[in-house]
Length: 192
Image (cartoon, rainbow, N blue to C red; front, side, top):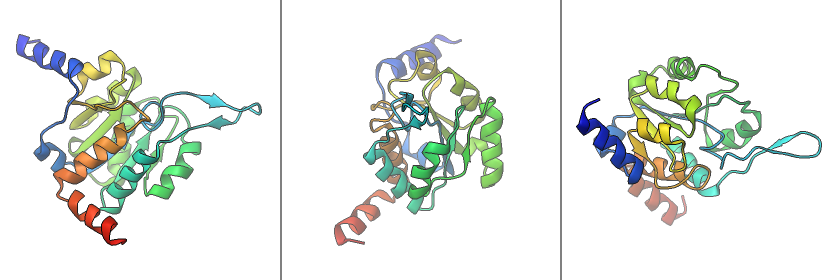
């Protein structure tokens, strides 16, 4: 690896930041891992063995705004997405792929469903099983508290951790890059 590549990766690990607006504006879809991205990564079970998930309301607003703008958002997880699917479907997110053990193939399947080129897609991850998905997409995003190896492979490391505003940060950046953020704010202020 060239020394300039090593320095660039080291900067990303130390100083989270954003990617150029033109790269965000060129995106055609966003694919999210679930546990550790949409949630803080805790796996919580009740006394009956039912899995419980906690979602950040600001992340939800960002997802809803992005989906309402016509931008496709999908979920790809190695774990079941049944609990998450109910909440995320309310926001306009879909398709959902759970129990995926080959995330590179999972990304390709989602992109086939959406009829988009994976190179025009972003994937957001938090841990090592997300590395194969990174290999398939044009923009690799890691949440701030992602595994070091994932942060090193990312094009963008968010300033916020998973389940605590990272998804809102990404959605806002995409809307801003596509020129849709101010329009959304005007509609909110007008009560529409």
